[in-house]
Figure 1 (cartoon, rainbow, N blue to C red):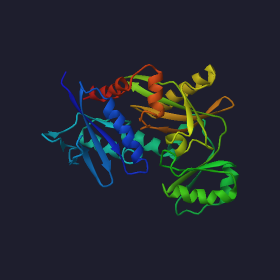
Figure 2 (cartoon, helix red, strand yellow):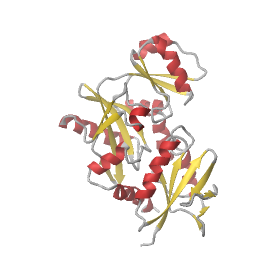
Figure 3 (cartoon, one colour):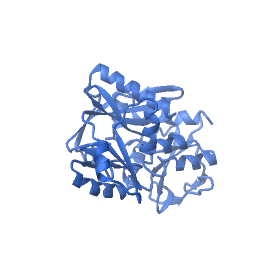
Figure 4 (cartoon, one colour):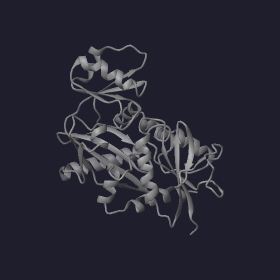
Amino acid sequence: MKKKHIAVVMGGYSSEFEISLQSGSVVCESLDKEKYFVYPIHILKEGWNYVAKNGDKHPINKADFSFYNGSETIISDAIFNTIHGTPGEDGYLQAYLKLIGIPQTSSEFYEAALSFNKRDCLSVLKGFGIKCANSYYVNKGISFSEEEIIKSVGLPCFVKPNRAGSSFGISKVYTTEELLPAIEKAFNEDTEIIIETAIQGVEVSVGVYNNKEEIVVLPPTEIVSENDYFDYEAKYLGKSQEITPARISKEETKEVTVLAEEIYRLLNMKGITRSDFIIQEGVPYLIETNTNPGLSLESIVPKQVRESGMTLTKFFDILIQNVLTKI
């Protein structure tokens, strides 16, 4: 079989770009070099470049996403999308690649944009009976009442940027006095804010992916943070335990896996997603769904993949073959 040219895009324009670079590096290292020519592509505010092993940077021609690899001009057969945040997780990159006819491994542009917008995604899923926390929305420049917010969601509550990830800009608020500073912090990441009731319970995360037409649910992971919640330190600086499989009952495991698959189907996802829940008194509440979850060696999805008995090489190959077979 002729080797395919696979561009692994990483970076992005958000605060998550460094985490994305880690995810992209793991994918580049793990892909089967007998089957693929692999090209790390850095999409950053300062430019789009193929970064060669010697560190040389070759700019991407945005007309067709072609680039010079040191000996010839390459047009990729497929894109492995590992960008967290904009423009790779919110639909912009997906729409661009759709227009120029290059397949990519993540959900399509509308589904990505919908899931990236927590407010809109939760609103859609609530209509299908998916349980979520009570929420209140604030947009920058629009007046709001702190008393009305507290009355609506109660205390403690979480204040989050509506369109951001990796816990950037998130605060857990216990008093009315803490609310305004938390909102200002969240506005540093986004112009839209979502404020939610702090549900108490066991936090679990569930990866879901498609293997062609089959939807596969990975073993759930239980998250035990050393901090007050699963913040940036807990996620990336070792301040948490991520236990796979989760220490929950068989009934709870079945319920949360069925729910994760239902959400995948309802949102018409493809590729790998990760849905996060809090199980309160046996009932799972959806926190959010991520269409480009972390893929570094210590990220949740790779741990779930290994627990399921697969190597990352095999798993990433499935994601690529899903889109190559559609060409």
